[in-house]
Image (tube, rainbow, N blue to C red; front, side, top):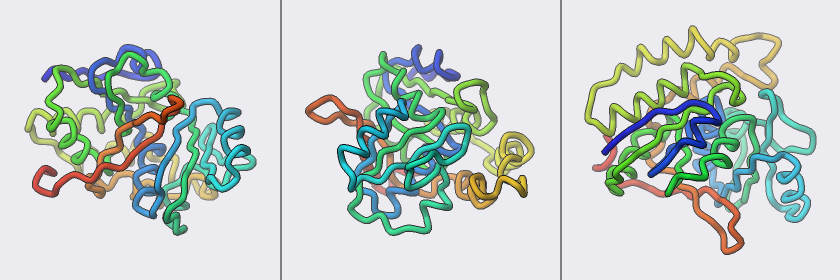
Length: 236
């Protein structure tokens, strides 16, 4: 199994084989927590205007959206796992648009299969990939609003690579790097309304959830994310 690590939108465009689009702070952590709260289906959408149109066409859908980390007008939720965890989402459908993660799924057009990845579902994602036994795996780090690489996404890619290769990985050291680096933004007092410190802890809980998040397609060709439970023996 050949494994390559890519960065930002150009990296998404280079992805091939099985591609894991990674957004730890916070898109794919949010989606993992949303599934834990009962969400039935998630439509990831890159274009926020398209997200608004989808919400307008389906008023019963929940709309979760951010730009520059902040909840956008008309959205039910921002991009905070802590906010998501306060609600029972059983049976609901969510439209999700973000500055980084959902942009990666839009641009990884050369991949054969897409997965949404973060630290909270990394082991399950690796288990899912091992079952497929692909020739090539692309780990795509979306960074900060697709503008620059970030500690958390690169560390998640390195962790997935270690899992797939059966190599050790120091989780505690990684958490400290994230806390000192890009994770600092969750500890700014005046930003707690949209970047609460609880999000840092929730996003850095390695392997909290036993499910992978592959991308599927409706009959009309729209992407949606599905939760696939992995058997406990497959999860390291």
